[in-house]
Length: 320
Ligand code: F6P
Image 1: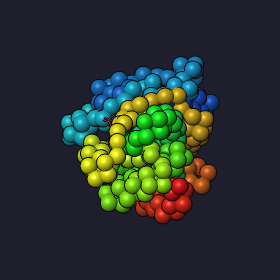
Image 2 (image 1 turned 45 degrees about the vertical axis):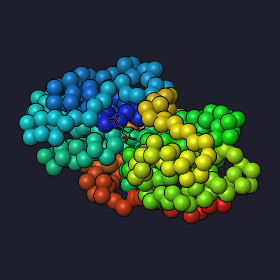
Image 3 (image 1 turned 180 degrees about the vertical axis):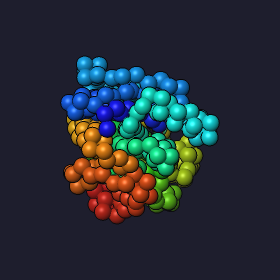
């Protein structure tokens, strides 16, 4: 293939720019033309497609977000919107499309594949909820952002002898909560993969108090089946402890990508171009055991890949 395009879609994630840069520069080395599609599938439908060159992607590797902008496109899910997107790919004579995004975005990519478009999918989401890769682009940065928030919250929480619940993102996946919670020394970690046991949570907190530990941090993933406000109220009511909550929200989606995310994005971006150059498409590219691997994209989305569902190995680490 000689003429390819790249788009970022869904929630932005730190490292998307590093992937775009790697794609544009690898393509340029392979003497392929690259087009950037603005605002994900929305921009594809609207024909917001422009050529990109090596120099144009200078100075973006350290920036969070995505220079191509992003969107969650309801239009693309309609028959009319999908047809318009197909027409645009045809009129710009795009031979291969690289989609960087999360679950929903890669499902959109699968739809394009079924319609005959050559697509490569890269995992770009902070959630780390894609089964074909050990890590998604943006996850490491988000974890480190949460980690720094935990440190700040711990200072004030300890000073006031409070219990603080920190809600983190992750959609239906508990990986951000687990990685940040373990490395941040949280006393309790709540993830959607496990039903929270309110009695057990209160028992641990009271146990801590009886041992003289007056302040605790609870990391709660947003996908857990109880709202953070409700949890705060329940714990306060049942234990009499001073409980506060912090919802980190979009704070954890921005910021300069870590070295690890920049490296991952660069490796995956390079591989996506290599595949298209060799006329190989319809793959999802990820990293497994440190190796860059590609899988049939549709099958990759259905893989059994729950990564962190069992916290039993953490019991010793969490207790004090
Ligand atoms: O997919 C990434 C993510 O940040 C999730 O963790 C979160 O649930 C969601 O996006 C928020 O989406 P939006 O930007 O549409 O509010």
